[in-house]
Length: 501
Image (cartoon, rainbow, N blue to C red; front, side, top):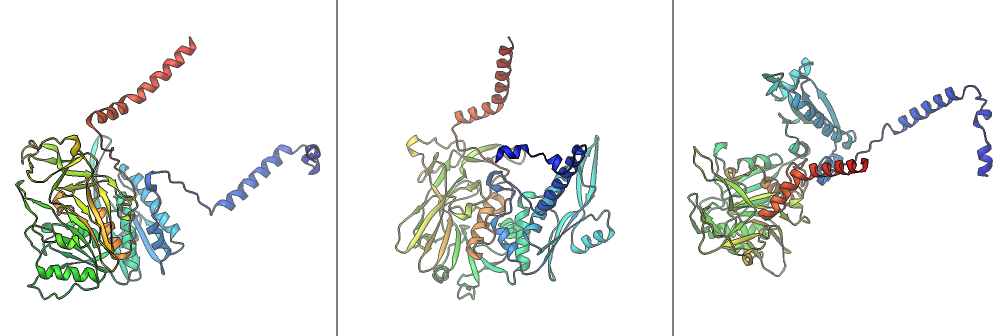
């Protein structure tokens, strides 16, 4: 059969003799156009980045698929952007296009240029998108350019504005949180206990955390002291954040209200110390009076301070001189239980003066740790030396892992998360390279709204810390990075030269 097929002459059958080349060319073009037409509506994307950082998260996709009406998205981007922002404009447009595709007709995207379209400029001003000032150095000249680079989302008569969309890393979270806020009929409430109200944002000790939480929750400071008229924590408060400031000792009445709230299937996140450290580097017993409440859930805060070889740089200089040095009492942690969704998009945390946790078995209580220190950590209990120049070196037998974040839940109701550092999310202690806010946001989102926005916040991973290594191993990594590639090229060149001879 195949031998007979070989004898078939298509040119003779179709009488193409003398015009073979032209007809073959025409047929090829027609086939190419038909295939192009068939696959034009199909798109294939492969994201090989770490953690699929350039793919919309499952939480975003779920929200977009469940939209019951149209969300209008307008991206105002000037045509005369500085050169360094042109690639960013492409990235933002690509991200918005992904929203458009995933929305299946429920996302209407417009990219507008206010510099060329006067109507777009008027629309941007009315919507609250400002003209931003960008400095640039081009052709040996320093210039300041005014340009638009903001996003407006609208749903019915409600509107959300992202005035500056230059932070690509958090843009997916900001977009998804804004859409979720727009389509939700009522904001979920969360309460803050232990911190005083501040009408001046600059005096708010959790200003950054409050700003992020306010994107999707109604944040309310709760006064549950005996002097207040509060008889109970309302069931409408889906999660309570409890802070230790050492100036406040929780009264018996406050303990009672917290216990009653948890008994009714309430949820709480505790930021508490085992030992209090003052600003002048002296220690005293923690004064919050919440140890017994946590122990009912099988979580014990040890009265110690944990140190680690994986330490944050802290400035011990004055106003005139900076003296940055690794401070073992400010630990870096990247040892996570990835099965817990709280840490799904978190890579590193910083703990200023942290105590360790112990988990105890309790009837009808389930506990699990989700953050630990490196195995090159140790503790101080009785004779605590905080001065960075006098901290004694640990012995090898003292080095081990310590639990520094855990959750516990009772089968009969109530769920808690414990972070044994009261300064974990305070404004003045937030570290640029760490993701403490992302962790707390994930926790609150899981506890208060069923994890609707979990794992969305960091779209691109920009920080990849080395594993905790000894100093000698760090030097090996450093010199390998410097010398390995030149050495390989030199070896390849030498082999080529020897072969020629």
